Amino acid sequence: MQKLTKLKLIKILNLYKIRLSITLFLITILIMGMQRYKAYTYLDNFILNLGFSLTKISITGIHKIDEYEIKEHIKYKKCRNLFCIDLEATKYALEQLDWVKNANLKLIFPSELKINIYEEEPKFILDNGNLAFLINSQGKKIEIIEDNKSLYQDLVVISGENVIDKINDLSNILNTSPDLAKKITSAKLISNRRWSLVYSYLTTLDLPENNPEQAFRKLALLNKRHGIISDNLKKIDLRVKDRMIIKFNINNFSFYESKV
Image (cartoon, rainbow, N blue to C red):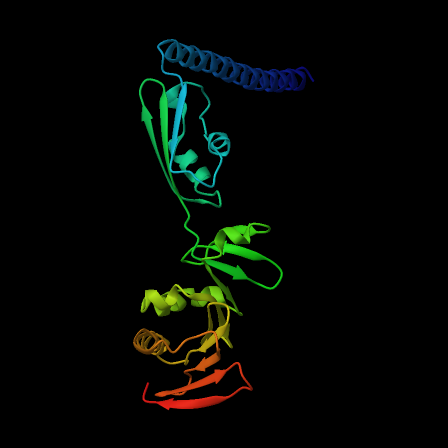
């Protein structure tokens, strides 16, 4: 009986020793953490007192974004001095903003942060039937257009199913003849295969599925030489190779011109 009692006491004592060791270990970690926090705080204050604190933020390149919004996205590590600004996290946060294409940041010692913003350049207006969006040349949506459409009347309005996937094709077509492209006010992707453009809000230009760039370039050349596009035209159909069907606004009159 005495042996059993001693064994029980030894087990109980060992259990208490283990619990005490764990408790002391946790207390030690807590104390070290507090000391480390105090050390970090002291170091942070020491660096701040040396003058390395953010007192000036220089922002360039913004036209559509407010300075306050830029400043709100400056990220810090767990301290307040100039060296605590997390440049990588700040750059990432800024580049998530709709109008920001690229952001470059630079620390100027002892107390300045320079931020250079490259804003997105709207190239088209995407009309999905319910909403209209400004988009860049790659099809990224920049901003919803509500009451300020007049500010972007020089942009081509694009529409049609999967039109974003074909936006590079449209850009290639328009780039073949910049002078004619300036007069294009809208472009619709038809059946995910071909483009129907509108010239100066009035005349429809139906391009072929194959080699639309060549057809657009030929039309631009004819228009430059002969001025064939006018307000009297309802449609110019270029879908048939080497043929151009012209429809007038008067009684749907039309005629063919070969070898265009």
